Length: 373
Image (cartoon, rainbow, N blue to C red; front, side):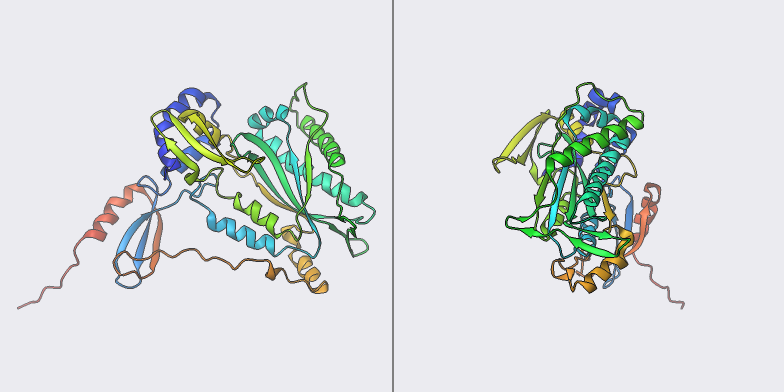
């Protein structure tokens, strides 16, 4: 398997030579973190065996959300929390896509544009739910931002998992969309796109951003029924904390080029894409989000502050979300290479200047007590 850290080390100089003036501080920090992930350059943690008292030093993972090695446990925890928020209603997956003409602006001012995409998508859904004759209340949504296509091109879009239900806070009523002959109908996708376009353009203009003259009149919003919502959440959780590419999909790397594979959305077949090393790294770092940016958000009655409300709904509607929730996965334990017992963490974040002293202590032979004659 070809590691992403190896590619960063090999082609970092080429990347800086070609794109150095366009690399942001966040992108430089991401490259540095992924390059040091779990190697000798990263901070160490000290482990002690619970069986034979063996001590060892193990490198830390970088923890960056773009790193393909890190945050798998965090992804599972997020999925567990969202599964507990499922409600007894038909769910829909709504996808709001930023048109190609606005993507260069999003790359330059990601802090504003990406944030407004998420805000305006939710505002659109909220407006439609309040105006809907069957709902007439506040909906709920679990929103996740993606910035890449399957080919890893820059393609910002936000997914919202939305139950076809709403809460009327004034009348304290829970309303659901009724099922017709052809199933449940939520909202018209073209109408959603029209309102989303108006809201986002107005928000960007209010933020002082210069909009391109050639802005399409027709935008794209998809609205797809996804049953109870569990499968849609699993799909979103799969790509939330695991970077934009799996290392097993990096097939070939030579002195100048990198080849990776991706699954074509239309045909479902595997395709290959070959780029120079610098272009490949630039493709990856384009998806670094601004520091502190929240790409997963909960809205309406599915907000994190609504735990008691959701629990009350589950009780009144006699709904158990546990039947959809996969069993929790514990963090895998580290085992002693000598006896196989579980290793216990003694200390973390050991700096490079401390390693030599600690390593010498760990490898020193045990002292024997002298006997006086």
